[in-house]
Length: 61
Length: 382
Image (cartoon, rainbow over all chains, first blue to last red):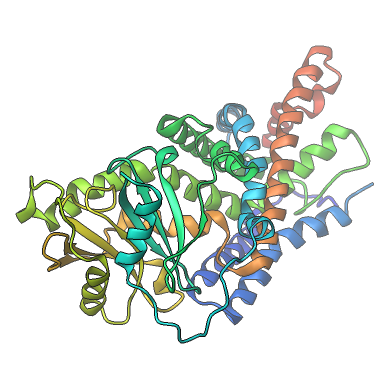
């Protein structure tokens, strides 16, 4: 999908920043404890993978 | 951003990537099996710990060391490490205080019987080849530092990639993949999309990998500074002829640090100890503190407690860089995610290489030049 106008930097980097923050949280939490916290980490580290899968699914053919 | 700024960042991205890509592909490919080295090794080695009553008394650590030395006569003990959940210690012996790894012998010893369960001297198997290719390409410290520099270039390539991501995405919404037009455009969009979603993982795994390549100089620096200050009164003393009990040394260290558990003991003269001391490396008892090691120094001649200090920041960084690079700190699901992200990184590297080749080919016949990296960047910057 193409927005008509040129997007400001904030818009371009909003989702990438969110993914980067979630990834960081996932990388750090598993260091702190075992058990439930590991599951939080798995969920967080799934976000970049799921984002890639989502982008691929809705590709323009 | 001006046209000129974009050109400069594009050039940085192109050259840092071109130089490191082949090595990064090697690291990603060899790293893939290494993520699962525990699981792969568990398949090939069965647990041969004989069943015995749970309350079987344990022999002393000195007996375990004697058992290893009986197997490798003429060698000296270098390290003793503790198995996490079994009554087993691993004793490393070698012909001198700091022999090359290839001359070391590691014996897994049952502490209930002091019988050797297995020798862990794997220096030819598939996993060993993967490990050496990944760590130093069989080139020792220079190879290690070289790969560290390649990792630094990857960091620069990632950073410059983020900068030029902006002009590419000026008129596109997040995650656009234009798969229906040219093959080049499809791979360009995939390269940008995968690069930006895996950004933080690539940066963390890349930079912690770089820190790991600095392990040898960092430990040498620690030994020359922090450790030297701890053992100032002992300076210049030779390695003792007769060593005091290592079992008593570990007990003394644990008394000095209640609540901590020993991870490994470095014998006098090795890289992780002084010439005159047992260094008992203690770890905290909780998951978070278990990643932080504190060395307690025990006089190896008299068995007396000498000093204990927490690690300086660069040794903590080195220590924390291991789990963050290996992905081995969150169970099997985390390893699987590590593997998927590793494969995505391979796609990023491969597509980057393809885009460069396709652009060169395109530039020759001018037809494909419309979508070239510089053309797209330039158009977006207008």
